[in-house]
Structure formats: C-alpha cells, structure tokens
Length: 274
Image 1 (tube, rainbow, N blue to C red):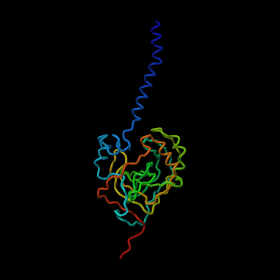
Image 2: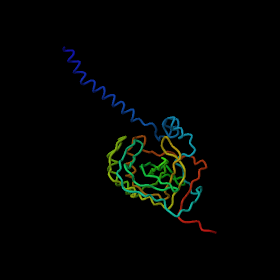
Image 3: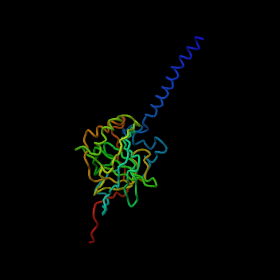
C-alpha cells in the first residue's frame, strides 16, 4: 500500500518533469538555425545549396541576388512616371524570425505597379549591412519591401541606408523591436502602420530580375533598388543586430554573379529626338 502511494506521488512529479524536458528539447531543436551568414561555416552562404534539396537553386541558379550595381554597366531607361506605391494604413505585426526582423501587414496595405502589373505589399524586413552594393560600395542597412501579384510572383523595393540621422519610419518601431529582442518567432502587434511613411517615390532606381536572398533563393523576383541612399542612426542599426540571434548579427548575403543579366537604370524624362 505504501509502495503504491509512493509510486503515485512520484508519478505526479516525475511525469510532468519528463514531459517538460521533452518540450524543452524539442524547442532547442527548432531553435537551431538551418543556415547562417558566416563565411567558412558549414551552414554559410557558399553551402546553402547543399543543405537541403529544395535549396539547390542557391548554388545552381542563374539569376541570384543580391548583385553589385555598377553604373558603367547598366542600361539607362527613361520613364515619365516615378516608381510610386499606392499604399494605405493597415494593422501590422512585428516578427523576430531569428535571422531578421520582419514587419508583416495583416490586411491589405496597398500595392505598387511594376511594368503594368499590380503587386500587393506583404511585408518588409531589414538586412545589415546592405546586401546590394552600388559601384562596389556596401552600405550600413538595407530595407526590403516585399510584394506579390495574383500569380504569387514577387517584386521587391529595396532602400539602402548610410549612417547619419535616424530613419523616421524605423524610429516608430524601436520600442517594439526592443520587446522582441533575441526572441525567435517572437511576435508583437504594432497596430496601424502606414507604408507611405517609408516614402517610396524615387526619381531614379535600378531594376533587374533576381532571386530571394535567403534560402530557398527562389528566382523570378523583380528587384527595384532606389538610387538615393538614405540615412539611419548607428543606434538603430545596432538594435536590429542585437534583436536577432548571434550568428545573424550580420545578415547580408554576399553579392552574386550578374551572369549577363540586363540591369536597367531608370531616370525621369523622355529621350529627345535627334
């Protein structure tokens, strides 16, 4: 009788402990990064294509991103309408994905037209340092505004930043970013966020066909990189780096070979007849 009571008593405490240990172990497995940006690492950018079968494009693709945007190798295109987003305020959630910080709009937040096709804004996220380079120069930060059309094709608007005055849009999110610091899959609602505050109205921008810059490196992405470099404070960049996991303090993929792809540079105005 005493043995049974002891057994029951022990079960009440040992079983929950074992279950708890299983949960913790499972959580730790999920926390392990499938890839990183560390040069020379077994999970680094040069090995992404070998880590999973469905990531093969990272190694064998022909339109990979990011690339160096060299002004002496682009084709100048004249346009009469600026690349302009038709955005509107919508509820958004800030998500720590471990490898970056993402702002995800919950409902429709507007769209942008690229070559006459409408792409709807889904999310934006940050890379530090910048992934794209201009004439070989890498900047302190890069913002990606990710859009999708009805056929699930993607168009990204990218903005580069150098150290200087704080970025006003990022300033509005600093408190929430601090709240999900170093918390993978951590999410926090931030209420209404107006994408227009990012001010996507460039007069000059680069455009080319590329890919996602993280695995699975899917190709067919239309990239639009603003020529004008904006400013961000050193503290803002530091917070974004501190918020993600240790191996992602620098989360920029190295530039990829252009491989004879056409890179267009759009400027205002029409070509005058000779």
